Length: 146
Image (cartoon, rainbow, N blue to C red; front, side, top):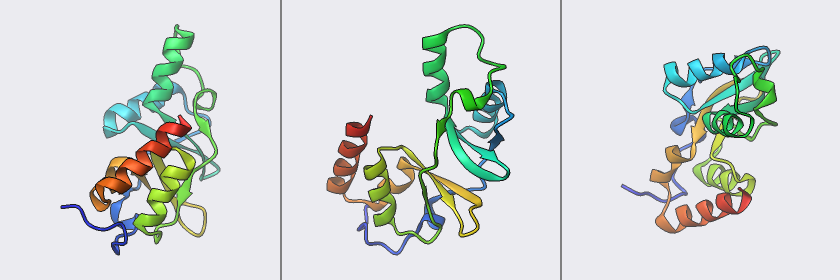
């Protein structure tokens, strides 16, 4: 069922809570094992407990295609996307979809008032709350940023 984007659902309602993470000292191999074991495609990278970036399975695949060779011992910081695109747990579906569109990303981190990572939201987590028109608008924006 598709409901209006003005639904009362929030980031806390649609996020995957407590995602697996790695540190800036982690290797690409460690992140790939998280992808496998947690059945996910993105791992937030933390420094001193705060998120500073995101490593995706796509980042690893593209690096492998470009660089070839053995990436397993490479630090995740060499491949991750730096900077965090985030929302707060109480943010609305409207705010979340706008953030996806404005930033052209496929995943958002959910960060509380103390700067702690509490969840992650994939684009697919919110599509059921949006009209087909809104989905098309956001997808167009994300593609334009790619």
